[in-house]
Amino acid sequence: GSFDGGGIYHMQGKLNLGGSAYITNNVAEKGQDIAESNGSAYPVHYGGGGIFSLDLVNINGAVKVTSNKAGGSGGGLLMASQGNQVTAVLKMDSGYFAGNLAITNEGGAMCLTTKGADKNGSYIYSGYITNNKTTTSVDYGGGGVFVTSNGGELYVYNPLVTSNTAEGSGG
Image 1: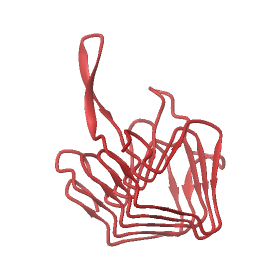
Image 2 (image 1 turned 180 degrees about the horizontal axis):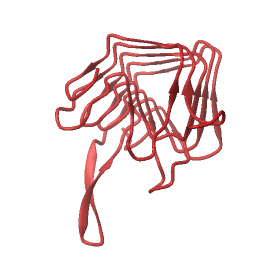
Image 3 (image 1 turned 90 degrees about the horizontal axis):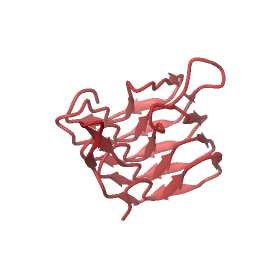
Image 4 (image 1 turned 30 degrees about the horizontal axis):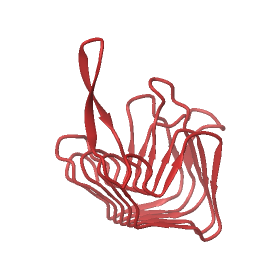
């Protein structure tokens, strides 16, 4: 197993997922650690059972991200910040996220710290986000999609988001 990106670990540049790509049955095992900086402890979350990214991810076509598991955040997809710098952008025109699981943190299908606020920002235009789950009881939840408060922004237009479960807050 791995700490981040059980299926794909994407550091920088563009990751284009299209056609009928399948990202399925991958595991990012590690949940979270406690790190220290200047004498203060803070949690460090890991995850991205299917995909982990710090940069631009384009998803279109009949892409299926299914049955992935993260010990931490983002059962299907974790888009993280680099320290306090938000660099990740998600552009999802279509696709299918189903049956993904985040165990100790947020975002059964997706946990997103992404840029938004303009036409070059992050969006989910269409697709299906269904039957995903997070089992955290101490974090916020977001069985389908969790957008972080650490600078995360996302526009959501026409996807079907249904039958997701969160043991924390928000399904």
